[in-house]
Image (cartoon, rainbow, N blue to C red; front, side):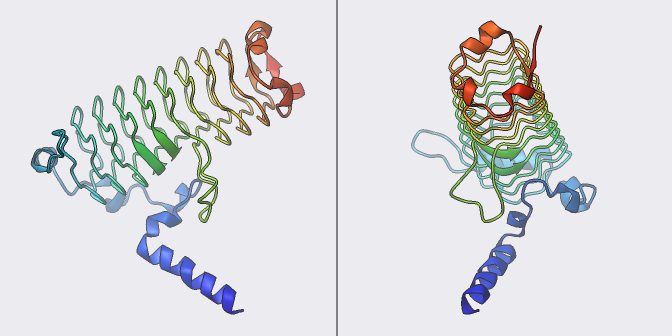
Length: 272
């Protein structure tokens, strides 16, 4: 009894300290995206630029601004350099971030729903628990990024995710399984070579002509995904769910690794 009471008090403390932690993946229906908190900005573009310019520099000359928790939705912040900045919990909903730089930035638990990050650079960025549903990331660079974000319905055509880590965080499951969620995402022509997608959710994702060479797909959900003409050389399909997935040619499949250990392979469709 005392143990259960102590556990409840710890859980309540977590919610009080950081209520956004309670908004786990799949709970977006409980959030009013039209509320002032989620749709309005408390700063202008000029004020954001000034804050970035005034941020302290490290020995290498890199400025690292602290914008944690700021409301910056519906702004035009295209082309700005947020590299190395603390952007945890920032609201960027429907914000124009075309060509912006977020290299090494912390975007944990940030909100980028319907944001436009076309051509943006997020190299080695941290995107833990980030909400990015329907975001536009065409041609974006996420090389080496750590991503347990919800990218359901997002557009990542031609995006670069080489060496990115979208695998499930098996050490921190107090608020549910945190992993890269790419349900119905558009990943056509994307480069995911060497990416870690273990246990990631790619259900119904569009992966036509995508490069999945040497990709870790162990226990990932690819049910209903379209893998037409995808490069699967060295991709590990151990425990991967392929129910109703559209697979590439037999020649491409021969280059995959552990395809015989995939789940529901008999229910997958074969590309002509």
